[in-house]
Length: 291
Figure 1: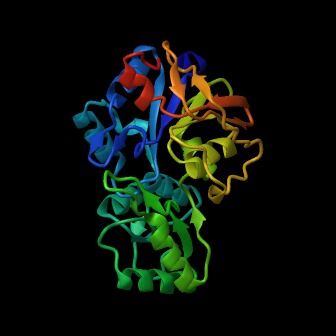
Figure 2 (figure 1 turned 30 degrees about the horizontal axis):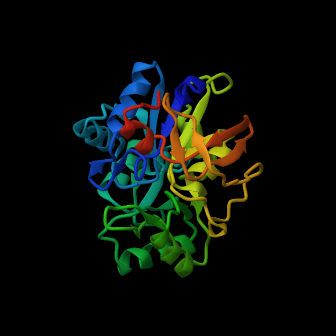
Figure 3 (figure 1 turned 90 degrees about the vertical axis):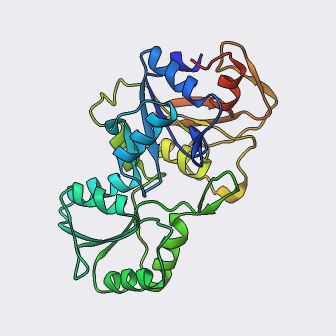
């Protein structure tokens, strides 16, 4: 079974554990079985809007008990990244939660000559926010993006995400940002912090090949892709060792095999690993269980 192969499961949130305001079917049972089996779990999300505490509270309310220390958001990672590189101030384009994570890392918020401009996502971001961010970047502030996802999944279809705002600021400033979120390895390094990275068998579970899978491979980790189809060439997967191979097989992650229309094969630097669709949605909803 899949759970027998790993000690630590890094779980993406949107499209894997939840969709919109609710859990995906069986996600609570799958996570509970991992914990019952003695596995460590981390929730790794590119959503920069909430704080880690807010994510943990939301998951717990939905029936997936979680602690803030088990959550890695791209907003929190940005704060840790900047503080670790000596930044003392930042101008934040994003949610109150993102601003809270930045100040929680020891930086002060500034609209005048900040060390960095942090661009995240928020439904209220407007033209003036983009203009101000671009001006500060042109004046010398470092341009840091929480992530570069073009969209995020919702029950009504994809919605514009941080990448759409980052693209506007990049176009207006003429400067490419440093991207901290997935697929950058820094997110995975933070998720592994405090663990013995040399001996901990970790795996990433995500629904997006271009961020979750590619990022895991860049960090030297295998990945499970929760997807009904093979990623297309538009996703531009260029990580060493990536070789998607569609085939008609039975996905063996569960105690009772679940048919899968696609199986993808890829490898991180820690060795070749098979991964396929539906480990949470297909497996746990059958009652067979993934762990």
